[in-house]
Amino acid sequence: MKPEILIAARLFAPTLATLEREFTCHRLFEAEDPDRFLRDVGPRIRGLATFSGRRVDAKLMDALPKLEIISNFGVGVDSIDLEAARARGIIVTNTPDVLNDCVADTAMALVLNTLRRFPRAEAYLRAGNWPTQG
Image (cartoon, rainbow, N blue to C red; front, side, top):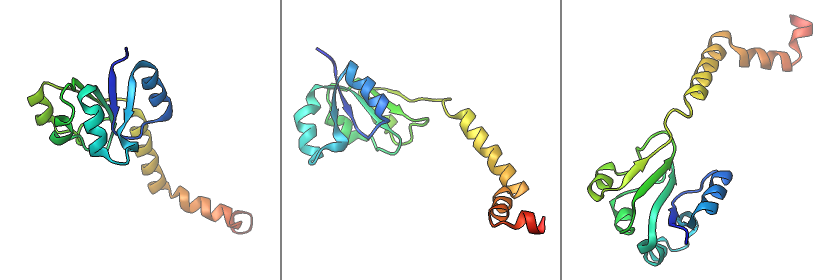
């Protein structure tokens, strides 16, 4: 029997597919009545998978008495009540360092676009001004 986990927020489809192969997944983000849903499945849940922005607070942890781990598919843990998790002995994980290169690339691109005015140059070119005005 596969361990049962709660999917608190919509995840990237391939990630969700992988989780569904390995675990029995319960999708909280699709529940019409989240409180009733948690009452039904909460006592069996051992893991919680979430995505940035979905608050994981003490109330949610209390609804999951067998919860062992919270896995945040994001860089930070700002949306997770770490004190509540620590008090309950729940492990909290995230995905640090996965976006560092992309964020650095984007920051450099924004600097270059600002200093060199590339968006303005592109608009000038697309308006047909280059052949006639140089």
